[in-house]
Length: 134
Image 1 (cartoon, rainbow, N blue to C red):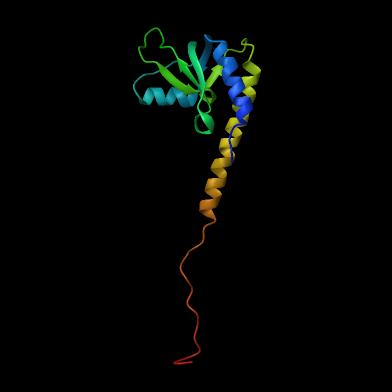
Image 2 (cartoon, one colour; image 1 turned 45 degrees about the horizontal axis):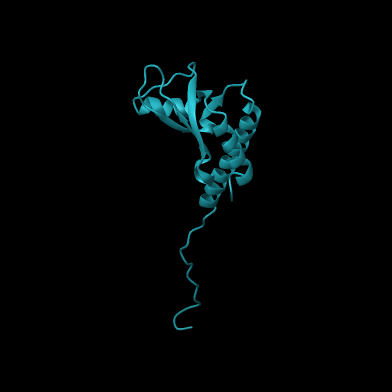
């Protein structure tokens, strides 16, 4: 099952790339990942997006973020892990994309879990016999 509508995602990706640089703030999943990797980011800090590209259904819309004032690490993140500046002309389109992609990913995860949970034992049941040699 496809996660993104390819035409909408690629068009939004192109429009965002044409509008760089723009400001974003990291969301919790990205903050946690960066803290775990030893490069903490701040939720109150604005970061600047340098490049936007589409990574297909697997990656979605992907942003390359300039390092912060104290950082030296360039960060790449899915746009679903970022909050775009509300004054950006494409902010509403990005929010709609984020909602739909997150919803589709949840549905996919639920289907995967349901498929695992519904598996039954593959052991064959033995046929009962009515006695010796019959």
